[in-house]
View 1 (cartoon, rainbow, N blue to C red):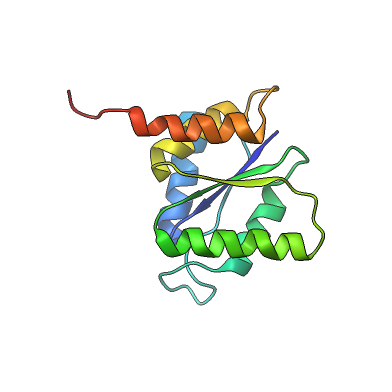
View 2: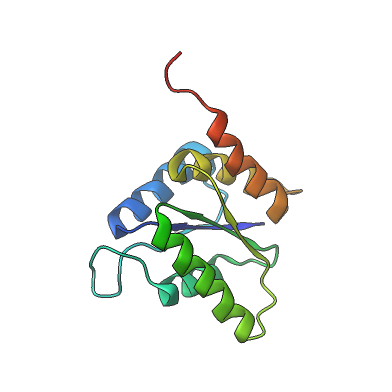
Amino acid sequence: MVGLVVVSHSAKAAEGIAEVAAQMGSADAEIVPAGGTPDGGIGTSADRIREAIESADAGDGVVVLVDLGSAVMNAELAIEMLDAEDSDVEVEIADAPILEGTLNAAVTAAGSKATVESVVASAEDAWDYRKLN
């Protein structure tokens, strides 16, 4: 199963998005929140993201969903840290709205034929959803 990591500048936001995705998307998906700084502040932490990726990996790879610019930067740094450790985890960052993308990703990730690529594509499909007609 492809794992998911939710990276937000707020620990509460990351936890809430993971909770909503698990309940509305799929409780079968492994969704690990990685929000805030280690001291409980607003921000993101490459170390925290790296640990979340390692926790979410069940052998089929991990998709990372992010909220703002520096979350992308720290997610990229976390992936580089894994590469430096010779980790064999396949990791991709999805360019998607974080809540809707995580919901889509959770549904796809729970499928037995899910791949990192199919989960990223599903997350990025969330850009097409309209909330108002």
